[in-house]
Image (cartoon, rainbow, N blue to C red):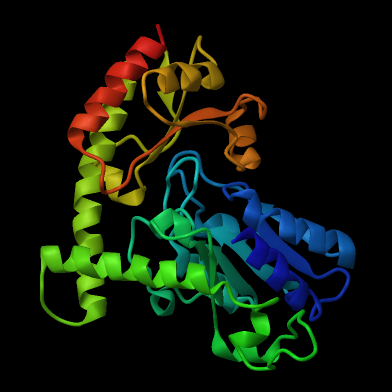
Length: 322
């Protein structure tokens, strides 16, 4: 996803002039921040930072509205935070950007494993993700409006085709990874058949995701409640069980005494694999007032996890934090 964003940002920049404005958010992974900061530095663009709301844990339309202007060219935002798990109302935010004449570039890496994405319903202009997040290979995926993909100048070798999607390939396509990506989609189709063996391929994939949402919501609620019961532990993100639909089951926390890296090492020795640090979302941890070098402890759940695994993780976490 990061490589694709660096690639596309250069093509978009050919349309912009010094003084034009781009909006990036304090909620995003660096893959959807640094490419735009670098472009702004190259072209003398103005960067405007869009905060996320600490009460709702997402980007609110009124905060975006305050930043939009006649020279806004792009809004770059995440569909879901890779650190707090919060899901943004991309459709509402994209509509606001479009009303100001700006494009919307969406990082859906963290959302794709947990929600069935409909780019038409979102109303965005570009959407990117990485297929390894939804059980495929390490491959970036870019969707863009056809007209834009046709009109934009692609940075490519001269003898490559001028039509999308081929113009956006920087070399020979990674055919073995594409085969893995196709198998990944087949897996979601199979999962949908297990839920409801009827309808179109798309309908089966949607059925799979609906089942995933219900299962993961229960896991996330169980995990968050268990963490909150541990003395000194703080969950950074939505914790209200009534709002669990507004987040993915990616849960970040800190402890009053035990640094995240130390806790992660203690969990690893118990066979529990988690992440620690800023997780390439340094603006988020800075927004919390947390040392960027320390960051958080991040526990990521997916649909193949079980309630028993959540309970085992919580037991291991209690041992790691004592």
